[in-house]
Image (cartoon, rainbow, N blue to C red; front, side, top):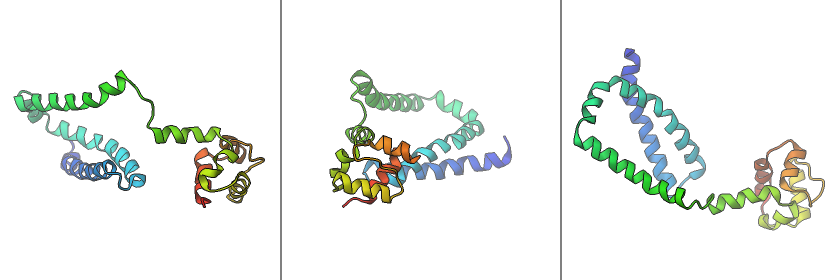
Length: 166
């Protein structure tokens, strides 16, 4: 293995693991989900690279661990813990979390229908969306139609609506 890669594999795992640990705890307790979720997901994916390098660097000791009972027990317990979450979801899928399902309904609703969610009438929300640079032909247009007419995403439409919330 390249000495530079060898020297940086374990410290990189340590740093990225600490980031993953802290962000995972924050997400678990609902603190700062808006910025911790993306960080946690992406940097956990980046963690794979130094992990593979670390395994490569320490392959022989790793093989020795595999031959010992603690590694088998720890692996079995980890698998059992993972299955405790996966099996119920596979056996009786419940769909997306309710808050996600609710948000997924919004693009198919009209400006007039969602206006009360933002403290507006259909007309005042339509005006706020227009003031935000979006094209609203009618308050009977769906948010998806407003997004397409504006060359924007429904997320952009919802962001403008949230910014105009009373």
